[in-house]
Image 1 (cartoon, helix red, strand yellow):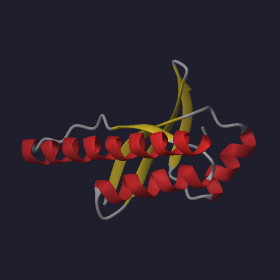
Image 2: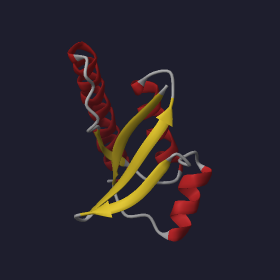
Image 3: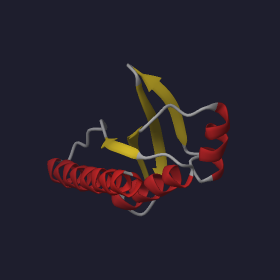
Amino acid sequence: MGFEFTLVLDRVPTDDELDALFFEGSQDALFQTVDGESLALFDRSASSLTAAISGAVHSVEGAGFRAMEVRREVLVANPILQADYAREIAAANMMVQTRAFLAKRRVG
């Protein structure tokens, strides 16, 4: 199953870093900068939304980036499924924020 979502990255990738992102497993992402934010728009096949997001976060971290936020604008007609996805996005945001916090503490 395919899932569409966006990761907000901690910085805009250079051309060399885009190559690193590709080789770390982000071939299914489109990278762009919108209003000063560096975005990775993923269309990832996985068994669940959580698995798709976790894999994408792992890929961008492997290339030296931090995911700062997870967004998902796709609406689902089924209200129960939409609520499930909203909970998964909230949990994913807690994960990326915790990882970013811990990374800053290790550096600082």
